Length: 320
Image (tube, rainbow, N blue to C red; front, side, top):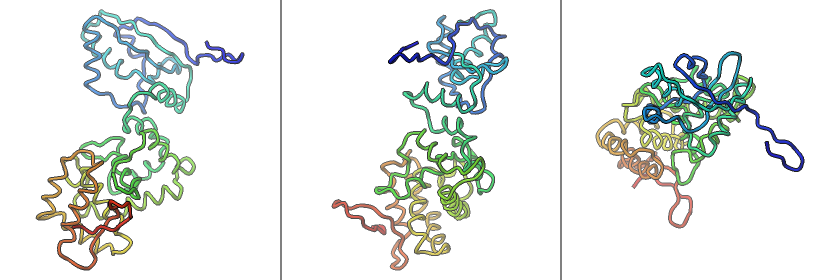
């Protein structure tokens, strides 16, 4: 307990130490919004136990009824399960911070508070706050592809879909969103209208990406992790080209222009850029490369994108 100006500031949890055996593990409950566990981290934590040492760190849990809802201890619980399954006669002492009857929102707040100085991925936060993101629910109901909290073999991560839209006006164009993971979540939550709907900003996002995806899927096939056209250094630059040119070209003209990326030098350029990893820093180079293929030698209806020259003046570049 800490006292500041005569005000008592009390801890909101109880601290406990418990000896945990194999049959005690079922008292703990994984919540639906918990971040995905990582095999490598579980293995490292299990090795600590195999060497006869307890885990460092505290288990953050919320007592609801007879169950301990795990706010921040999923990796330690998984490693303890692995260890005690192999050594069922052993017990391991753990330290817990036990909250009582927190709501789902309060659980997420406590997780964020506990991890605010550590790097949590965007996927971690998307899974935690999935129930609070209305545009996600609408996209998964009406979009031509399914969205997940992270990229899987057949589902696109929500962040991978929306990052190009959020940076659509950036000059220079980086493609990837440069804010923190929780900032991204907060942007999505500002698009909520009531419990199920989205506001005008959300609808602008939805309509733009839905329009783009219909053409994109027709051209390059549906999302799959092995489809090169859905790799970030391909998908993000092609979205920017489409977005900047959709107001002065018809849908058919844009479709025909982007179709050139499916053959000959277009395929070669896609194969070159697909392995460049995250596109930040490469996006504008990739765009110029793709525009050379798309525009070729034609004079009319050349596609462009906005960049800055060395004098910081905004200019239109149509490929060189």
